[in-house]
Image 1 (tube, rainbow, N blue to C red):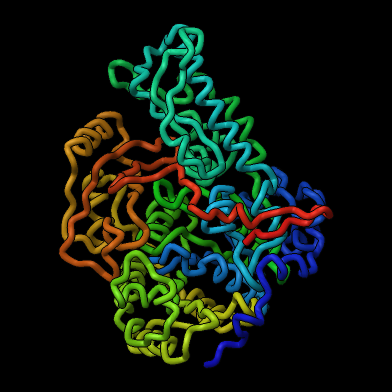
Image 2 (tube, one colour; image 1 turned 180 degrees about the vertical axis):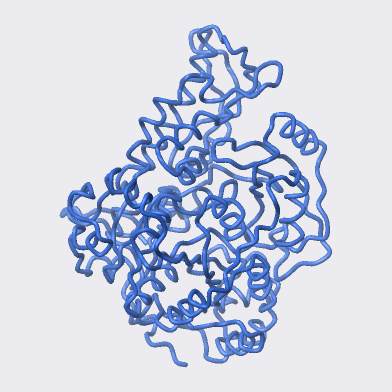
Amino acid sequence: MTPTTSESEIPSDEAIARDATLEDIETVAARLGLGPDDIERYGSNKAKLRQEAVDAAIQRGRRGSLVLVTGITPTPKGEGKTVTSVGLAQGLARLGEDVSVAVREPSLGPVFGIKGGAAGGGYSQVLPMEDINLHFTGDIHALTAAHNLVSAMLDAHVHHGNELDIDVDRISWGRSLDVNDRALRETVVGLGGSVNGPPREDGFMITAASELMAVLCLASDLSDLKRRVGRIVVAADTEGTPVTVDDIGATGAVSALLRDALRPNLVQTIEGVPAFVHGGPFANIAHGTNTLVADEVGLALSDYVVTEAGFGADLGAEKFLDIVSRQGAAPEAVVVVATVRGLKRHGLDMWPADFDVLAKPDPDAVRDGLPNLFHHVDVLREYGLPAVVAINRFPDDTDAEVEEILDACATREIPASVSTAHADGGAGAEELATLVREQVESGRADLRPMYELDDSLTEKIRAVATRVYGASDVTFSKQAQKDLERLTDDGFDSLPVCLSKTPYSLSDDASKTGTPTGWTLHVRELYPAAGAGFVVALTGDVLTMPGLPARPAALDIDVDDDGEIHGLF
């Protein structure tokens, strides 16, 4: 089981992307049954679907099978879900299936920060890589403008008489920017006298954390988008009554800014598989997956759609299955991505992660970390879905370490395959694709959400905490208890819940690796994401505006005299 390609032999993602021969986007669209009039070209290699084509596809109904890609509890570097998603789609195409892949749009914050882009990697990436990781088709810029239009109209309403009697100390809608900038987390606006005021505390979030991003990704069509935008809560009046975007009259203008952003973007993988790169909500305070529209269009035009959920199965898959799938995008199989590196971290009980130590061969640590993988698989089976384990193999992983995972999965009758999609493209994921297709064709999927919508908010949170995370109990702060009463009084108790916690542990404490037991989930605050259609429960400090690290990726990015961009990854 020797790796097919050594690390020194694999060119950089940038070099691979630059050397790739891209097909004209009309050729890619034709694989979905779309003609030239169904797309709006953005140059030769990317396009947006025209609204008429989107409507026709959705009206046609579901033809294909949805495969969800999730993972184990990750390290800060991630375990390669996007690489696996793209590789799996290419593997299915090699098996002769009509397939498309749907992934999130990268945010400029991570691109210039620590994680880099989000277009896959190696020989399993979506192209054109530079365009996708930078401005792309302008969707995120449109969201930034729309978010800040709401902010401006809200402050203008207060300034010009405040007819709605808005309590300026209870304005919950801040401002947004698609860049990591910690200095903007907490700000004061309205300084300079009454012509600019009144002064009040404010702050910025990264655009991916805006509720408008979640709204865009859950809207089924333009009219649904407008309904969702209109019901977003932006403040409360002096009596505590919610004030919405509709109330301040911003719904129409915001929806106009987002009209084109709602149309899916079409690009291609390095092997020419159609790829929808569309939307990118925060995977913590929101649901963390690409747009529902992209999934539904893909399901109408393909036999298989591979889509990805954020973080591990406890956060990403749970939110997909309890929030997104209630609207129709129900998967028929789930892939759990595991790495030797990630399992060793759990086996060594290591936090923070020391990647130099994790690079050293240690089959025993892999074996000790396997309960984390099995926890995620067991949770997915409790949802009623068949799961396949994809071992995303790194060049330095030893045969002994990989065999520990394969043998343990075989003992538990969990289908598992080694994926070398990064180094080998679709050929490196063909065995995985075969296993996934077998699970889909078995017809065993019977999705059962973790809770019912008519359960109380407390019951919903407790179900996720105990049945998904493995907590023994849940406690609510005094503030959270007040929030529960207020949310129920305001009629938000029928919504799904979106729990925000660290992605680096099944618990709410990042230092607790493996599969913690006997712990209690602490909920400190709740608020409505009424436009998106869920209630957010915060279980720790959540940064909605990341900061740049000591050595950001931006230091390595440059453009030469010929206009070639270097340093993106």
